[in-house]
Length: 236
Image (tube, rainbow, N blue to C red; front, side):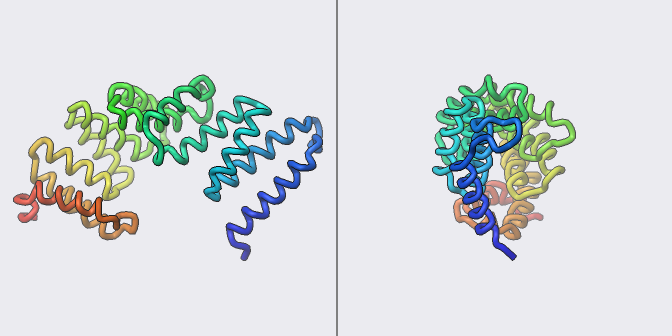
């Protein structure tokens, strides 16, 4: 069985060869159109292999051939790396792409990403408007994280009851330690320590079963949350 890395390497080599020889070999296409498609495919492959610098170079090359495709290519890069960037940079960059994204297949994911960045900057009202639109347009493809994000926004503006409702929706869709943690914290803000303790205990149990929940910072947070609800926690 050929491993994934080898397959992607072969794909990149094939696309690179095609790019060096592209002369409009696809019937009805110019060499420019052929290059656009090849660059898109190679950039996507680089993204998947975490070769982000090479992917960016392909996106920039694509932008020289066709500005809108190049910017969308870079937008996909922003989605993949925005966690590591300053929220202000993400907001500025995504706002610059708004004309290209509106009414495109990327619109929902774009607004989801922008809402998260706005929340991190303290722009709760703008973030709330964006995530409401995301949830409205998602139809039957609702994501737990969308409700969790809106719940975090409601916490930020002080509407704790609505936050708890959204965290509960997130838990219904995908019961993870993170969403129980969010709801436990919200109950704590309402001084409902019994409910806080129940969710904290559930979050700690799920955390112990999840390999992604091993870092000490999160464990410390859960222990602090447990201490907040300590009196009720001991009764469970």
